Image 1 (cartoon, rainbow, N blue to C red):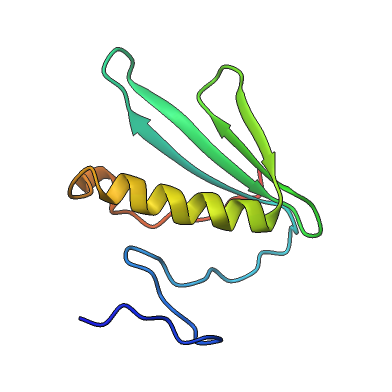
Image 2: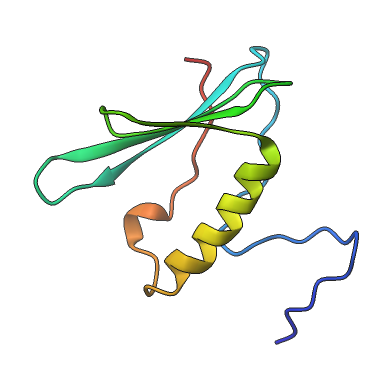
Length: 102
């Protein structure tokens, strides 16, 4: 299998969903709950606001971060490689994450 990327070519990464239709509300939230050993689950949220940094929240504590779109792409790329090196994705992650307005 050839993994070379041609400059300017659109590439669909593994496990990527098709782009969502834009909602009437410009701000969108993408949420997923991750299983946790000691708790029921841990919420993970990414807020996307046009012309603003992305806001990432993990859990209910202080794990919050703003990222520029370029930083978010770099983080996504590094995370995708790092997490892929740990083994096959679990079944609970194989879902479509629909954006919400709240």
